[in-house]
Image (cartoon, rainbow, N blue to C red):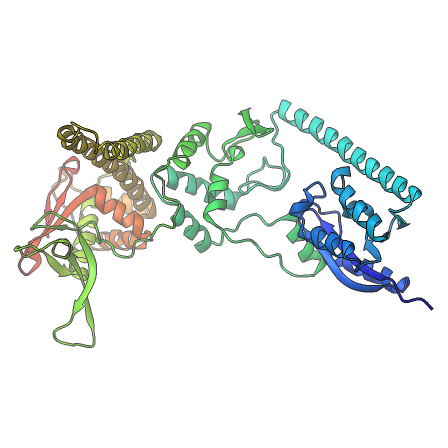
Length: 514
């Protein structure tokens, strides 16, 4: 009695395939074949989520299988069908040559036993391969024609459900569309991708679950697992033309579609400009943790103050949270720079913001800046920063030194002006968010209690506390944006509240002192 033939099981599934059994199911089918035909399985070889048209060098499972065939370790190769090996002559030929050289045969569930070393076997493999290519080419032609027809009628080409829409790619998914609309506004107003990612996670907004995962979950009787957000997937949904009502055909935007976009075509152009900005940071942004850190101004030197801690003289086991000017750390200075308790400043600033809002007669006074300006300002800012880099590269040029200081000062001033404008736009948008958080009853009371001359108030204690609570409920980056756009806060030397100077910007027409 001869020894059982040594068998290898090969399984493959394309990433986009949903009608082909999963790898483990293909392997189970082949294992049953091995038992039926008394084969000894020496190993399983698989390529998961890899197309049959991919080069063999990109298929580790096939590479390992061919290597073992050439080493004489395998007598028979098992698979569900011949197309699992490959779908084109180029890729299939390598396995045929290896099998003929080693004397290995193929045994598939649907085609039966085939010997690549015989004329009949080679013919059968060739015919099946040609037919598989014919079927694939015909399918491609039909898909291409159908796609052309959809584009002609202004309909999107949808291969999977896009984020923000239902499976038809036209009907908006209310929850996702609302989240995407907020993300578009946030980015175009100068916000960060990091903030979008964190907000989506906090609101339990997940990326679209793939059809393969939905199918697998149904087969395994479990809940499907949603993928996690990344900076790439966030940028992907923000740059998808279909989300702005634009048709895409063969990789190019070809015009407006017949459905309602979550964003507009103009917003798509601005988003492209923003995302292509070479100065845009792709690294995770640090989420702000302290209201006035980096915003507070030292009254001694005019530099920024940052949140830190210092020893508590009364209790050495605890440390005090303070804002301190960092100038002394940078260089030796005979001057005494500002330092103040964090809670003291934060309370004074929040109260000043609330006081300013109580001077607004109607929420319509808080009209936000036109966010369409953001793309233009960001482009100008990119050009200024590029000019600064070029200026630095010319420092070694003879005779250039005298011109450097003047040009550098001009570019620095322009960069500061443009950045201030972006901060103002972000602040205006955040103030609109605060105004929206205050209910209609609040604005009705504001109108009722405000004297006609606007110089004083009736009892507004509860109303004041409402503003303080609404401001505290905003994300910290929005709180900082409001403060930066509304006021400058300076801390002088000495003790007590009198050294905190809060100056509301001139366009607000109000000056406050803590």
